[in-house]
Image 1 (cartoon, rainbow, N blue to C red):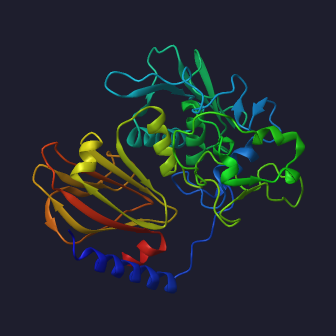
Image 2 (image 1 turned 30 degrees about the vertical axis):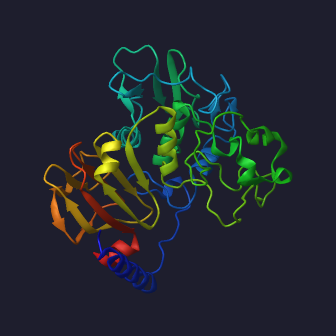
Image 3 (image 1 turned 90 degrees about the vertical axis):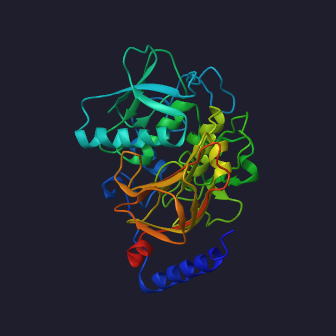
Length: 386
């Protein structure tokens, strides 16, 4: 046990409060043009960007961004799944149009790379596969549901759709997922205000019956509509209200949520120890048992709405066969903040150069005693601590 941990966490919380008192919150950004260098957006939700980009485009779409073909999703779809190989990997071949700039192509690769880090799905460059995704700068942001036969277009119009979370939203459709608010049990979690919705778009709010993967409803999913979706009036009116309260956030502003990651892993039966942390601050821990159950290693991707991440490892007891490693970015190809570390340490503080940090914990099957506890904070808090 880490007897010092409660005290250390209290100290960290006190520092947070001091930082909050001394600095103001960063202002939300207002639109796709107000993105950060990595394509994330801080003010509006992913689906607001999609809804705006797809307004009045000459393409028949379901639920605003789903190409009409078949009505299916991960709750009732098996044949639309991409096939898993014997090594447990689910490859999804794709090509990217050369019409995109080098920077835009890099953003698309980065958004897709996260799936490989957090799930057993890997978006791979097409060689000769007959079924594949063709990512093109068509009209608007849209895609098909799941795997279809042959060349399968994914439209990501430049520059409107060049947003990290928008790319991941459409990729989720490609993997077999519809929007979160169409879940069978959605009426237990949200109210649909039909009177406030433009009647031409009522069908976008229909429930799709099927399996919910036994996972909780996710208000912050990258697949969730925003609270004013398809409002009938100007000024716009609320169309979706969370039942816990109208102030509960709906929709994602950065990218995949932790439950999005869990949904993909459940749908494709990925036995992995993975967690995504997207709050302003939080804590997590790792142990030999959790790593062994997840294939020998665990990953925590910290991707937050702030300028940088501060990580405080408040207790670390790692035996020689195991190690913890921290990367300054989204992937293992990012620069390393903490090399493979073992032994006994009571405190390690690390600060990233940007909004992303990846923590890796590896434990051999013979090890049963390694453990660590960590606390992270972000944005103005990290600035204060650094």
